[in-house]
Amino acid sequence: MENNFHKLAKLSLVLIYIVIIAGAFVRMTGSGMGCPDWPKCFGFYIPPTEQSQILFKPNTDYNKGQMIIYNQEELLVAKSDFKSDTSLNLNNWEVYEKHDYVIFNPVHTWIEYINRLIGAISGIPILLFTILSIVYYKKFRHLTFLSIITVFAMGFQAWLGKTVVDSNLAAFKITMHMLMALFIVALLIYLVYSGSKSIIKTNKTFKYLILFGLFLTLIQIVLGTQVRQLVDEQAKLFAYDKSMWLSDIPVVYEYHRTFSILVISVNTALFLINKKLELGNRYINYVMMLIVLEIFTGASMFYFDFPFGTQTAHLVFASIIFGLQFYILLQNFLTENKLKVDDLQT
View 1 (cartoon, one colour):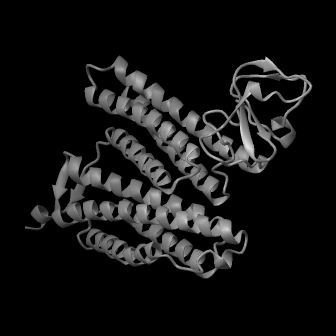
View 2 (cartoon, helix red, strand yellow; view 1 turned 90 degrees about the vertical axis):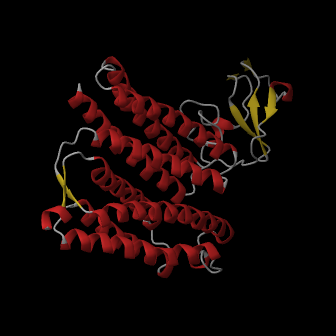
View 3 (tube, rainbow, N blue to C red; view 1 turned 120 degrees about the vertical axis):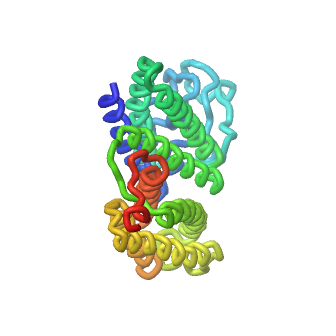
């Protein structure tokens, strides 16, 4: 059971990171409202590919919840199943009032739809390992408990995705959506780590510094999502003139950039402690490499007007750093077979 359980947990973790990548790509391409409703897309299970599919057509069968664009100003939703007459009868329709976004872009629609599809697929292995843990509940109670929490977290995350769409991409809800994704990552990493039986070296300073470093990473991600929201607003104003996206530098950007100095300093200290005391923790090396890439992508966005892919990469690198730091945290706080370096040196 344990082997299959942890394989499914690892697969789930990989898929969740793919979802994060897909979500970041959705934001980079401005496709967040590609599907104006949830969980369907314009009322379809398979989204439309051309605008004619969401314009009124006479003598056509419509299903309840199906949408059409009316006068390029409103989304109308079918109240029930019916067959249309030769002309539009507004008694069969109601105005979609959750937001006023009325744009159809097939590229954006399918980018958002694929993002949702990947999210749904990622839930399958989570459901499977949860069922597996329930079957072996008496032996692995703590895994069953955490597995069930993960399932509920995925459900809550799906609901948050709906509220993001309903709010027309409200900044606060986007931030909550991202933090919930990281919470799911943390749960999955714990489940993956529960199968680890390695012996590690640890040190008190390193142990508590990684906890502080993880806290800083979370703050930096939150600040980053706020910066991203302001950039998105600038992008709407100046369209493709990327040189203007940071023409009026917001205060939160200054906080984000200045705070990165503290993040770099703490993780550099962790790297040096690991090297000096020969703790042998290779994951902190990966963290440092990703921080270098974070600096590179951040500088590229600021100095070279947001090269393609840098926004997505910047967010994905940050989420991977969080995952690695959380794994290191578990190693230092939960592993029973720990060798304390201070004791070894006395």
